[in-house]
Image 1: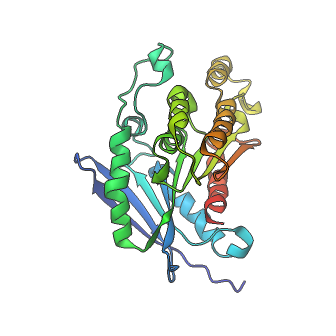
Image 2: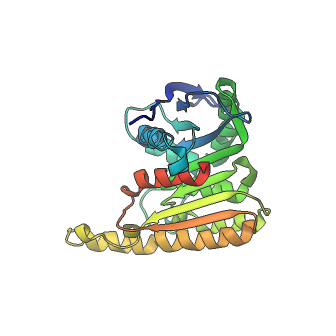
Length: 278
């Protein structure tokens, strides 16, 4: 094989928000000369859980961009200074503007702390983006927000209420059930925009997978999945977003066969790279 494989420079550092709460930032920089307009940037949430996988997908795809549609880009992972895969308390606070619909109706147990959405977006816009631009040449017109699960809900909320913040949005298995009413209300007020939106959800996120049907908790799992209707809500939101954003927007929905809430993520990463970088 004659193609040279270059591994992006990868950095990790902590960056404080203006209220002093630190975030762990993972940064992958492409090799080679940047284009005249700068590199496109993908901001990935929950980076403790998937940054390395995302970088590997980009590295492999960028070897042959003419075949994959994947070109060099900067990946910025936003995570937390923790040894775990998730900091569940902080991510719930950061990604939400208020409690879930289930919590408000008493459908779940004690509600976690919520309401940090605006401050978190402010950190991205006012602190993180300038820091990334300081470290490498980036294209301000090609910025993507990528999120999975509750982070996917956050991505859709930013799309609906702060549309110009990014030029592309990718929401994988978005937790639209958290507050679908808020998302719809945001879309009703947004302006037509030439943004790109990709929503992906797994086949087994609304129904039980074959390997789950015999488990003791199968009935409870099915009831929760039916109530949250991940696939139906994702498809419905994509249709509504296409109408709200107008004909200059590109809106893509995909139901991923034989994938569940966890297994969808690596496949969705590759598709997302092609969608935003082709």
